[in-house]
Image: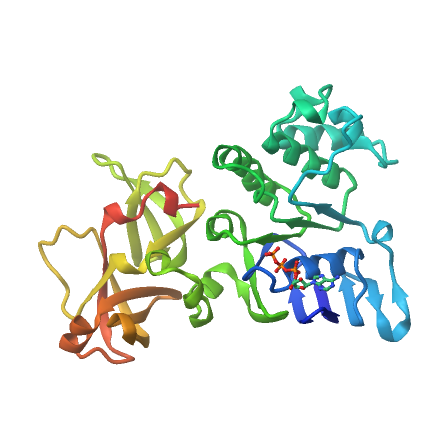
Length: 359
Ligand SMILES: Nc1ncnc2c1ncn2[C@@H]1O[C@H](COP(=O)(O)OP(=O)(O)OP(=O)(O)O)[C@@H](O)[C@H]1O
């Protein structure tokens, strides 16, 4: 467990973070610009000292103001990947990777180089690398330290779209294959969808909501952050079967609830995360028959929020353990007389869940 309880005044921002995070997977740190995300990362890495408080990583105390403990960055065993790669221009990639690394573990070196696909770059200098390649080297350098935790501060932010797309599969591999817990600062919901297991939303220096990505994504606190077209739910499901005649894959939300989505090339049994846009979910009170809509799920209404200025109603449904938001017009909600607790059917068009919504 990473246990954080720190306070620090930074100009007009009062950073006051209390948080317990798991020692596994990727935790996305999300929030508006200037809300304290980088300041938190700097406090964790030891680049900045909290006014008060403590940080414990596993069984190691990194700082504790009451006990006068403050480990400097080099003693924390924490890797840091910045927005810009910050490589040494006069060293080759191999030189950058091993700089300051006294542990000559060739197997680990080979594993990291393979994971990040940088074997063909080892003799090149940073000036000849693309932005995405530089970031892969920077990630490799951080991993070679065998850190107890990796901090990544918007590693894709300075890259153009093609470079982001080039780096993303490596980050996805990193998320799946590396056992080091990663704290990943981002503004991008797409990166969170593809990479993160946990998510922390920070506002004005404080944690607003934290937890598993699917539950934070579906929380009312998250709704103001998702522009109308982006409002969506994330649901974890297992790949079951591909349709014998059509380019659709069936994924199971539970033993008796499934979704047909765009064809996925994943093995049966693998977990996937499915994003379902709230505008693509409709509700009926009676089970529809002879409909073009492929996905009809039994659901119970769990919450109803009016978004008056747009004459829209956001309805949160429970489908087994999963939460699903549906956006309706006020007219439709009035006509159906929807109430919390009602048993209804949620309809989702098969074509509405595309490759971009599957991770
Ligand atoms: N050393 C400092 N002295 C005074 N103010 C500071 C200092 N460091 C950070 N701040 C202020 O604290 C606030 C939070 O900054 P921080 O960089 O942590 O935000 P952020 O959430 O990472 O933003 P962004 O997403 O834009 O990178 C900003 O208003 C910043 O000006």
